[in-house]
Image 1: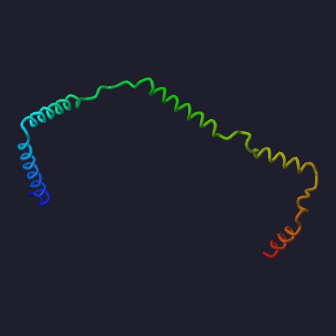
Image 2: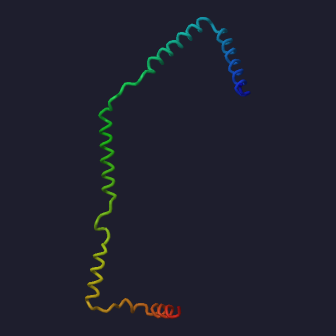
Image 3: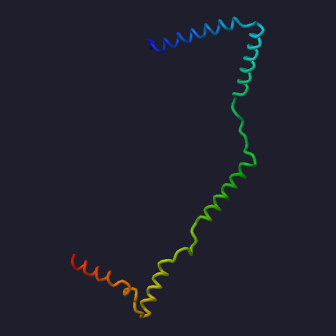
Length: 127
C-alpha cells in the first residue's frame, strides 16, 4: 500500500517525464543527435574514471612539511617554557629566614604600625 505522498510524487515524476519527452521530440533532429553523442561521451568517460584509484606515493614535500611543522612546534615549546631562575625556590627563602633569625638583629618592622597590633590583640581577646 502506497503512502499518499508517494503516489503524489510518482504522478509528479511521470508528468515531468511526459513533458520532457514532448520537449525533446520538438527539438531539431540535428540537435538531438549532437546531444545524444555528448551524453554517450560523458557516460563513457564516467565509466572509465569510476574504477579504483591507484595508490599514489606522497611527494617529497609531504615529509618536508611534516619536518618543518615538528621543528616549529619544538621551537615554540622550548621558547614558551619558564626559565629555571625565574622565581626563588622555597629553599632560598628558608635560608634567608634562618640567616635573619640567626643574626640576632631586632625585627623593627613590628614598630611601624603599633595601632594595628593593639587592635588585633584586643579583637582576639574579645572573641
